[in-house]
Image (cartoon, rainbow, N blue to C red):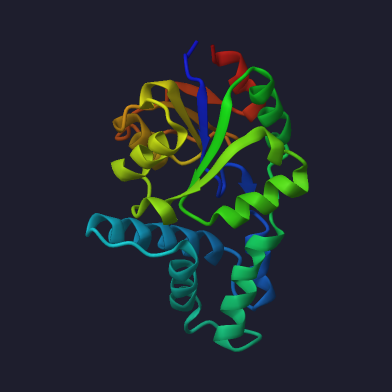
Length: 222
C-alpha cells in the first residue's frame, strides 16, 4: 500500500488513446508507422530543449517534427496541409476505456486528482468533458506554465507547488518509464500503467506500483 493523497496524471498516451493518430498519417499518404517515429521525435526535441535551459510549446515542436518526418514522403496534399491534418487529430482523441472508471474510483476514495502534461491543458479539458469526468479533477496542469518539460525536476516541483502538497504525498501515474523515473527522482510515489505487457527498462528507477488498468490503482492507495 502507498500513502498518497494527491494523484498526478500524465495525459498523452497515459489517459488519451493516441492509436487513431496513425490513421491521420495514412490519410495524408504517409506510412502509419511514422506516427510512432514522429511522437518519439517530438519528445526527444522537447527533452533536448529542456536540457539546455530552453523550452517550447508541445504544439510548436509537434508541428516542426511533423515537417521533418513527412519531408520526402509522397503525400496526398501539400506539406502544410498534411501537418495541420495530423495535428488536428489531437482534438478528436478519446480516453482509454479503463480511464473513466479508474478516475471515479480514485475520487471516491478521497484522492485529489490533477494532471501534469507536456502538452496543453485544452486537450485534457476536452477529453474529460466528453467523458463526463471533469468534476473529479481539482486542477489541470501543464509544463507550459512550469517553464520546463517533464522529466526535469522543476516540472514536478511546479506540480507540488500548485497542489500545495509535499512530493511525498503525491503519486505520478504514467505509461512512460521516463516520466516514472523523473517523478521518482523528484521524490514522488509512482504508478506505471502497463496496458500492453511491456518490459520496464532497468536503467530507470522502477515504479512503486504497476497496474494493467487504472481502476486497479485505487486498491493500492491509503
